[in-house]
Image (tube, rainbow, N blue to C red):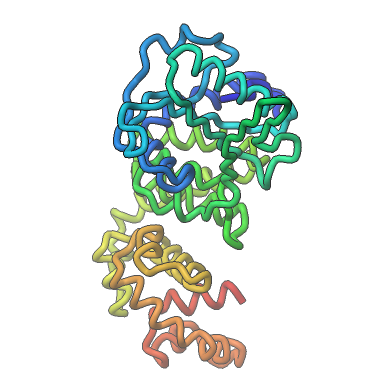
Amino acid sequence: MASKTSLKEKNPNKSDGNKFDKILKENLEAMVPVLFRKVLKIKIDRTENLPQIRNQITKESEPDFLKMAFSGEYPKGFLLQIDFESKDERATDARMLEYLGVAFRKYRLPVDLHLVYLPKGKPRYFTGKIKFFGLNYEYPIHVLSEIDYREFLSSDVPEDVLMAIFADPGGLSATEILRLIVEKLARLKGKSTELNKFINQLKVFSIIRNLQLETQKQVDNMIDKLEFAKAVRADNWFQMGAQEGLEQGLEQGLELGEIKKAIFNIRKMTELKFDTNVIADISGVSEDWANMIQNQLKFEPEIIKLLKTGKFSEEEISDKLKIHPLLVKVVFEDL
């Protein structure tokens, strides 16, 4: 990453900056497709490794991503360089010009240089433009906080899902975003050792957003949830369900606590006008099941009205309206 000291100023642990750089190096290969499509918005036919990449410049200036790329406009190839920035500093424009000069001098090929900006909002101290005398150079700055987090969270690639922490939350709180990220990682990797790797990476990323404590809280909640699921799988009581919707949820392998969480997600994301297929993917249920809950959401005003009378139990309201009992519970808890 470009700024090697940016994380050190935010956390007393001096190794955080190096950890972040290491994570980017490990994850970039898997992230490249979504970076090209969703962030850089470029079409690349293919990329190839460059020879002796580490010998061309010093370690302090080593780029995050530099490869030979081929496209319709440049069928003979060009250099594609991507740099990640976690700090708003005045030297960035000069550093990008240095990258351009070093890469062009070494390979004598056109250079397409992109900067991906990780903090919230646009940078104030660098502009992506350098102009004086005969020099007129511009490079694109891609601000992740301006990209909808669903572009990353909807991916089945864990490395992409992690990037949702830097994206536009779309009205959700940091707590809700982190919960969605942790739950998606858990669904993608289950109890494998890889889950621990991605959770640890998320903790490092959270430093840039100053969300270390909230991230740890969501991770702890996930661990508790996994332990709960493990415990109830041996309990026959949790396999019982009188309502059709509850039975369908259990048939999909969901426990009661997971069904309730899925309904919460469906209700929240329906309010935000998510597509049903995205809602189902993030909630870990089928589209038919998500659509069933969405159809029952039309009864929410009536649920609230009946709850406020204080005359009916949650079970009675569920029977009266012929809706999922846990939907009533979710609405009640929200009230």
